[in-house]
Length: 299
Figure 1: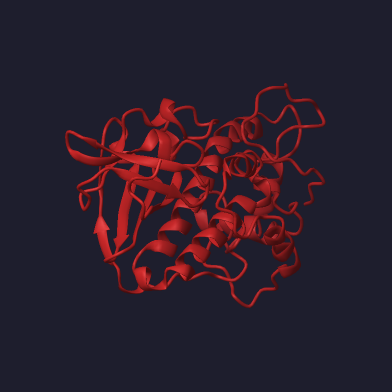
Figure 2: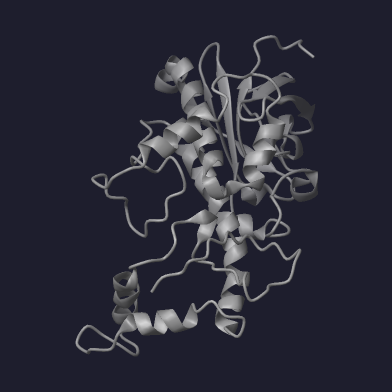
């Protein structure tokens, strides 16, 4: 079985399908074309033990080949593609959230080599497999290393074209650089769970890492399939509304710099204390790493 198409399908319905562009949902984020994967599909079908099993000679991949045939008349594939698109998009944001959390939470960040870009293994990756390091070096070289200016345009570009995985590499590299420059904060600083309030509070994970003279706030979204239009980024005030993170360790309003976008966001005093508004924190990306600016009177 071999598919020569190279579709990336995120649910864009701006143009109708033609005979030449039936979406292939298995080519998620521009993944390598399917070739020689019959054994994987056959194994999956046989383990179901519904219509086939290892004891019989039925070829499981014949079934898979039939339901994934790239033809306009294939109603299953069209239906599955509609379901797959928002799931793939939510999976992308879950991956970014997971990556940021493991870099900033207490402990040592653990990375499988090769997982710097999207990883589609159904089990833990095999660290003995060959890795395309040249591709990763080239992708990393295309991203700014140290830039404290406005990076919102770059982030929007990376999010709008996620298939190359550079958005994950960008987040990983900037978060690791931030951690390396603040080793004492992450090695010895306190871990402070934070709470959210507002209409989307259940969709928020937040905590702070704090020492005597440094504070970093980590915020990520969750349950992304339930946040607004599944084919649109879960960002901005239209999604997050009045949702805010309460900085229960803080008593005064002040400014925070977001590491991935370069934006400066003001923590304001509200009835429940000092808060960071998520409509601003998640204006361009539903994950954020914020550093408290030392000059609290700035801006």
